Amino acid sequence: MNDKSTLGRRSFMKAAGAAAGASTLAACVPGGGETGSGGSGGSGSGSGPLHLTYWAWVDDPTSTVVQDLAAQFNEERTSLQVDVEIMPAEAVYNRVIASINAGDPPDATAIHVNNVADIAAMGALQELDEYWDSFPEADDITPAAVLGSRLGKEDNPLYTMPWNALVTYLYYRTDWFAEAGIEPPETTDDFLAAARAITDPDAGRYGYGLRGSSHGHIHYFVWLATLGGFDAVRDEQGNPVFDRAENLQYTDWFLDLAREHQVTPPTASGDGFEQIMNNMKAGVSGMMLHHIKSAAELTQSIGAENLAAIPVPASPSGNRFTEFGPNMNAVYADGQDPEAAFEWVSFLASRESQITFSQQDGSLPIIESAWDDEHLQENPFAQVSFEAMADAYLMPFTDRPGYSRLAEQTWPQSTQPALSGGITTEEFATGLADEVRE
Image (cartoon, rainbow, N blue to C red; front, top):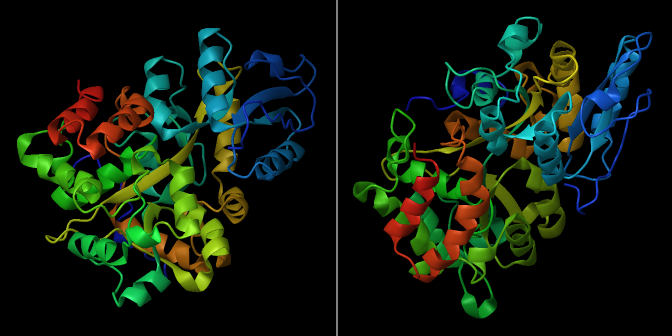
């Protein structure tokens, strides 16, 4: 399994012992300098501090954790200040593209792994290898996150600075399982049997919340690589092979959850994250794939006694694959001072910043020494994340410029006809593969 991003059992098990709305929610940290469309608007005068522009998003629009960290950073420095703007994730991406095209990018931003290859292909990212050794905690960043910032290949440049991480696992309704007299699934065969056992269309209950809308491809590839191994998804050169005749059986298995077994809600082809969450909370779905940042909301709605999580079930042959989802920060080559911007994004990656951010945001730190922090050790969903991490890898094809188009356009456009039988398994798989084929 070449070019897969994994923590391995050694380091991880030692720990186990968008805002809504279209308008920008500007949240600038005090410290002078009016931020413009990109980096130059934050420039300080010759006698004052350099003001860096940083754009980011947070899932909780009321959270001030990024601004608070920036205030701490600014307080500790006199010659360098960071002006933060918080906005929805889509707005960050759109503004970044517009500012790059205008020749006035920000100094640094949060960046989604789906968009790194596209922006790198524009020549806009500052490669960070030359600054890496200046970060005193570089050796404490989990290797999976570093490999993720290289888009899964050791010999790629360090395109971004790791920030935090998420690991996909399987949520399930413990009360539904108890009613059906079944145990949590250990294999994919167990998973299908459990999904069928808890499905009751007359009661409006379905076994599994399939994500047919944007970014549901993540769960598709999780299941494919689990069922057939990573080599059934891409070859050693990174080319897609999941559309080959010998591998279509795994796509059949996935599509048949809706087509044949009908263990998914009737709305599955159009269900995005919000819909699969609402279905789980409302008692429509009994299982779903996601990560630790869903735990609090699901627990509040369902009750801690009715919700649990396990690693993705293994295939009958023992394969298991899940997503290591890195969140990153980018430094822009045409910003005011890339080295100064690296100082800011490396501050966000430091142990103390990581613990602060994890406590408030709910994500997992990428600094290994932070994994034994009390707030993680006492969280059962963090512990499942730790266990699942042994089989967690970067999503395939994130290094291909067509990846974001696959995730946000081709996938949602293809799932409806595929799940309804309007196109064949081969047509579905080939359409996806063509987006990331070189």
